[in-house]
Image (cartoon, rainbow, N blue to C red; front, side, top):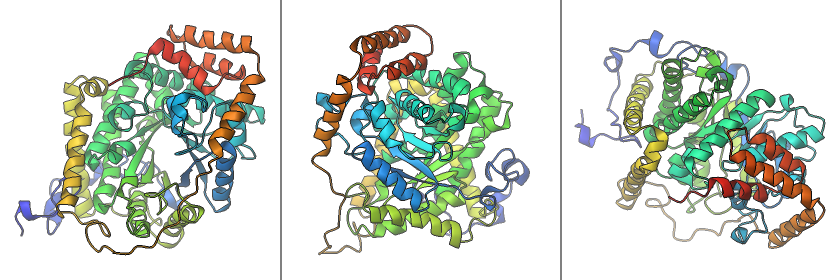
Length: 527
């Protein structure tokens, strides 16, 4: 047997033995550590039938340019067999700026769709069956505004709020840790999040109020263990904040969802997904005394790893995405996005988007891995890895608890420092040729063909600004001013903000104007 220093390691540094056998599970108890699919502690999945009943939701992430262009891509993907929508927003929309703001210049419609007003949301959703298709919106600081826009458009189309379903990301803590599209300081952001929990419990019962995201933590360079540890620590903070605000845990916890990254280390990724479910069951049972079984079920979406894609030999990314998607399915994901092979170069072309969706369809309809729940159960390797990933993740959560919880640890820079160190070590391992990336530091090509990339329309930004100008010109200025004043007044109280924001949208206030009103009261976070 090789000595431990010479053994291969997972991305989290867990050594992989040359052989696994029954001795590796000598003290392992299937009844308590596995259970059955759909039963506590949910290691084997949150539903008893898993994919034998129906496949995961194939939810391809898309959004670019203006509302009309994204609506067209939505319909293209639905016609190709996609079963759920997932919307990307441009940076100004994410940061609470209208397209005509100086800070929006050059960014309008670039990494997602520009949504300034109710008019944009109407165009984005035009012709879509909002009572039949669920929609995920990757939006955080302005999540409340976009959710209310969606609800109002559904209402205008005769679809009641209790008939719409979907998810808003609404996960601000990971923005401070890894992604950076925050607006307000952490504590006002937590207040907005709990207001969303309360509003949706009363008005939009089938909406997932938060997608607690490890995806961006992993994209920033974390390990698999750090991904689930830091994300679950954030989830603990959200649940505690909601309980402290007077909400009953079983009133909102069933609508919490999670968002994991899919990376290349196949067996560690499967173990990560399984460990996260078991840990969440423990957290909700022991920390929060949840009684509703649905409060203890970790339901999650997976997106394949953007940071694993290479600009060199981009067709190789099809194989990477396939491995990552297969691990997510073997690990029991509830929905899945597969990246386009060209996304290291540009927004995905239609050809790449179709190929990414076909990857999911081949796994679902041709591979046979969906024919029984949790097919890796009982594997000496996978069960050992699941236990080790869980153990190491609990160690991180204990450290965060000692620092006062996720918010306090963020304010001390703890998670950011840990991720930075992991990212450095990973990059160094590639630079030193200790880790092989096919087509990058091994099996390279001298003369690669020039790839086709997604074209950027130069008329998009001025066109979006002109539409916003017309929108602002055709409204009642007094009603706008009054509605924004109520938003500011409510922000200074403990009342739920979403009601005043909804009234502001009905008065034709824009996303940027509402965000500016909140900035005046809450301030802007500067790390």
